[in-house]
Length: 315
Image (cartoon, rainbow, N blue to C red; front, side, top):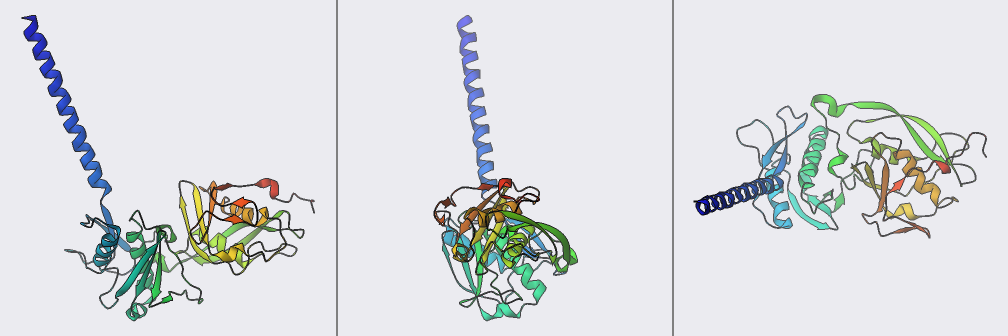
C-alpha cells in the first residue's frame, strides 16, 4: 500500500515538473515573439504627427529586414486613414550600412514634400529603422548629396532620440530656454560658466542644442571657445543616463591653445547640467577607439569635473 502511494506521489511530481517546464517554454516563446515585434511609424491623417502600428516582420537577415521595413514605410496602413511615411512619388534608390550607420539614398521626389511632411517622414523612417539591432543611426541623401537643413548645413546622422515626441501643431513650435555652458578661460586651463538664453525648434533635442551652442562659441567677454568650428554633430542620443555625442573628426583639430582636458569637459560639464544625464560618451565618426591629443581615450564615459571650473576670483 505504501509502495502504491509512493508511486502515485512520484508520478504526480513528474507531471507537475513537466507542466511547469511546458509553462516556462510557452512563456519563453511568448517573450521571444514580443522581442521580435516592431512598430511601424506612419503619419496621421491631419499630417501633424506620427503614429505607430505593431508589425511582425518575416525577414531573417539585416539586409532583408531593412528592405521589408522600407516597403512597409511606403505602404498605407490597412483599415485606417493614416498615411505612409514615404509618399508614393518618393523612391529609395539605394542604401548601405557600415559600422551601424545606415545611409539611405532617395530620389529627387523627396524634395517635393512640404517642410512639415518631410520632418514627419524623417522621424517615422529613422524611428522605424533604428529598432533593427544592427542600425545605430540613419543618414539621408538626395542622390549622392547629403540632406541639408534650412541653414545649408548637413542634417547628418539621426537616431530615434533625434526627434522630440510631438503631437498636433507642436511640431512647428519653438521653445525658449536658458543653457548653462562651459567655455575656456583666457589661460586655457580652466572652464568658465556662461548662461545663454536661446530659442530653438522643439524638434531638436536639448542635448544636441547644447553641443551646437558649444561649437558656436561664447558670447561673453573674456570667455573663449573650446571646440573647433569645423566640428560637425553627427548624432546625439541618451540612454540609461549616458549621453552619446558623435562628432566628426573636425573635433580632433587643435585650433585653440587649451589644456587637453578643457574641450572634453566643456562638453561633459555642459551636458551633465541637463537633468537625467550623469555621464557623457564621446565618439568620433561613430568610433570610440580614438585618443584625444595624447592621453584622453574615448572608450569610456566621462563624469562631470567641477575641479576644472574656475572659482570666483580665480584668474
